[in-house]
Image 1 (cartoon, rainbow, N blue to C red):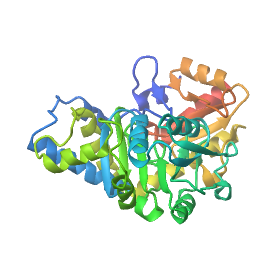
Image 2 (tube, rainbow, N blue to C red):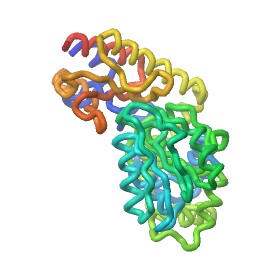
Image 3 (cartoon, rainbow, N blue to C red):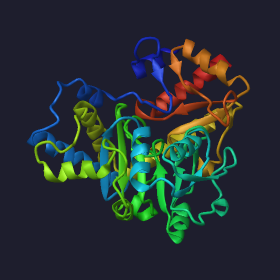
Length: 365
C-alpha cells in the first residue's frame, strides 16, 4: 500500500483507508467532538443545542420540520411510513435497485397496497411509466446506492402533486451531497441518516417534512400504531418541555457530531459543498474510465456520493484492495458480482485520496 494513502487517511487496524458509501470516517474536528464526555439529554444547554441542530438541518434540506431519531436510516423510513400512510392505502414505489426493493418491502410490512414501478437497471426512473391512479403516495430513492443513479425528484413531485399523492424520498445516500431544497422541489417528506453525506457518525435518522407533508400526517384518521416512531409524540415533547425536548434518551454525542458536520457544510456554503462533490465524482469516474472500467449511470444522472464501476473481477479487486488496507464496497443487486462501489463521503471526499485510490487500482491490475 502506498505511504501517501496511509498518511492521508490515518486509518484504524487493517483498514487504513475507508472508501465505502457509508458509514464515513470523521474529520479531526468531528472525531474530537465524539471523544468528549457525555452530556445529559436534558437541561437548558442541551435543549438549546438540540434546537440549533434542527434549525441547521431544516436550512440545509429546505424543510419546515425535522426530527432526529436514534436509529439507522431504516428507522427513519419506518417512521415516515407509519406517519404518512395508513394500512390498506395504495402507494407506488420505484424499484430502483437494492434499496428501492427495500422500500417495497417496508411498504408491504406496513400493510400498504404496493404498486411497484419498474426501473431499468442503471437508469433513472421514467416518469412516463409512473401510474399514480388511486395512489395515496409515491416513494422513491433520490440516489440508489446500488447503481449510483440520481432520480428525477422534481418531475416525480409534479406527478405526485397533480394526482394528490404525497411524495416520500429516501435521501439517505443523497443528503449532504446532492442539491436538495424540499420546498422548491416539491418534496413532502424526506428521510436521511447521519453517517453518509451529512458527515456524522452512524446512529441517527433524520426525518424532514414540508408543510404539505405535515398536513398529510395531521389528516390521519387515527394516530399511527407505534409509540416510539409517532412523530407527533416527538413534536409534543419538543414544544412542551424546555428541559427534556425528546420522549426518549438521546445519544447526545452523536447529535453533537452531526451538528458539527452540518455547521461545516453551512460554513462552506451549501451550493459550493455540493459542487465540490460533483467535481470529485466526475474526476473519479473519468479516472476509472481511463483505466478501462465502465461506470454505471449516465453522467447526467450520476450521483455525487457514490461511484459504481463494472469489472469482471470486481469481487477479487475488492479483496485485493482490502489486503492492501483499502476498503471499497462490493456490488449490490441488480449488479452484484459485476460491480464495485466507491464512496465519496466523510474523509473520503478528498481529491488526493481519490487519486491515490485510482493508482492503487492501477497497480493491482
